[in-house]
Length: 252
Image 1 (cartoon, rainbow, N blue to C red):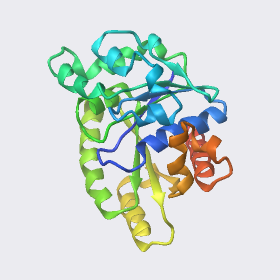
Image 2 (cartoon, rainbow, N blue to C red):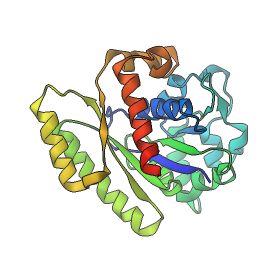
Image 3 (cartoon, helix red, strand yellow):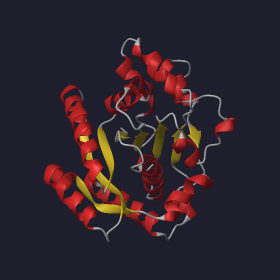
């Protein structure tokens, strides 16, 4: 059975999409078959993962609303063992359409039910909000991974997200996979202070691996490839490989 992990943080610009693409690529490089589901209407994971949106006629929207099964939407990428369910801007209207649907929180969970044996890990890239699209992702997931910047305002958003996760943990089988620090700069005192504060709250749920802020990580999506292929020996690529290995070690 695939493990389903929602990558969520209602604060934007914390590295959710970068993490979804490069975490999946690193897991695939280590021999684990992965599926990324793009649940963000901005659809940056789709293009950053190498899917040409101009050639796609069905998106995750179609699966949520019931127009098409997920099997007709999954796209292969240039990375062996890594597939993507693409998104498009019309996904933003799905939130409104889902509101009046029966079982609206379970649409994604139902859509991926038949894929549980096809992949080892299913990663869901969530939009920067706590709306119905993110709730669908959290309900479908076994666990949630929280990418987080080492800055003061990130702590405020983390508290709100934690409250939502705790509520869902009470209703569904959702666990906290952990907190991953992104855009890390070891030269600043603030980074160390934020990490210390988060560790007080989450303890060993904070991953030891930290993803540095690098130009190559930022550039890779414009070429439609993960950093592991764009800059294989770079600090960012190696950090995501280290994270994938730490993650797999924890699974054991």
